[in-house]
Length: 155
Image (cartoon, rainbow, N blue to C red; front, side, top):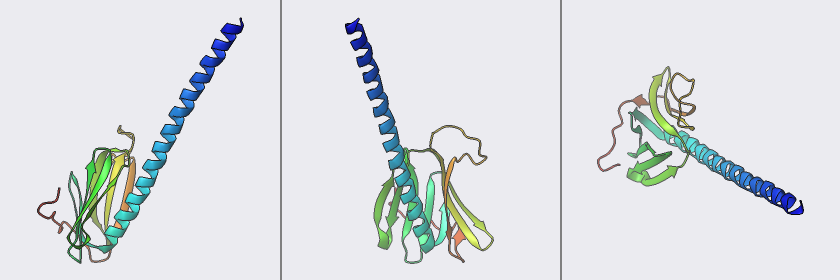
């Protein structure tokens, strides 16, 4: 009986340890994804504040700045990739853990709205636009939709 009781306790302990480890990994992944999402939103807002035009297509979003910089956002698996050319040349990657990315650039009265929407779970949801999460920013007054074009050589 002692051996049976010991085996039962060890089995219960091992199961608890495995479960706690899975929950910890899931929580850590969610925290990292949330931090990347916050960083992506901040960067998108900063880029949009300097933009004079925006173009969105099925693949991504391109912002053109007055200083000649072109900034391209694209889905890269379950992450968003940012490629800047011109005076702000650089690259960044935001592992937000999503799927089904959709890109928006639309004129509204007095402003231009740009956004990236995606489904973090990779499945269908109830929203009409198919985006469970949406990060939006507004371009300054006078900005236009459709005037930006990706520069040659950008990925």
